[in-house]
Image 1 (cartoon, rainbow, N blue to C red):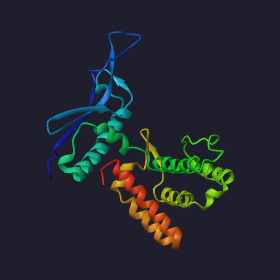
Image 2: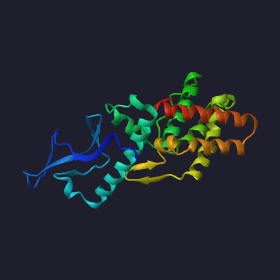
Image 3: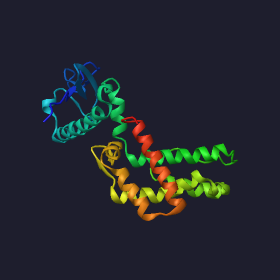
Image 4: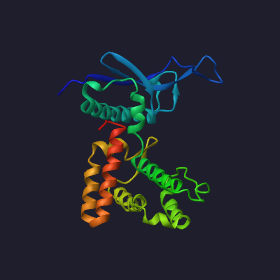
Length: 237
């Protein structure tokens, strides 16, 4: 087995200003961080653990479980990053990458699709563009699609809008194949799951077995564009 070129562990970031216990001011509580050491570079970033401690030896069981989970999750991400980026992988900025990998893939998809609909409506200079709320909320995509068809009827013929409509079927199938679940404050599947666990292949098979002609072509274009975007902001393309 190849020896790891990095190490990770949870530590208290005592460089930050502590929280002082209101009952006993002598007790100082610090946030939990992850220490990543790679090629002798020491890098600290915020853990998903939210409890403050005086000493990690006194961590409660739930936080011990979270730290164990987070270490495993981080090892998977780091090993993927090293495999894809090789010598270009470096620790500065890894916290930003970690934040991306742990995002909900379904939420990312919905945000991008809402952004597409907003662009279509605003670029068409619809008189309704300023009365439609494009702010992202989970499950809002369907309502926005329905509102767009009523307020901007011509949008139905737009190819990008047709792709947005078809994407609802795409993501419904995805959710059936990979049900969403919450664990330790994260929503799975994540971007890491999409990149690493062959989800693109599953969805390509779904398109090929379900659609024909124009619909199949449009959904394949959407799949490739979405996958490219997810890879571009994580492992690179």
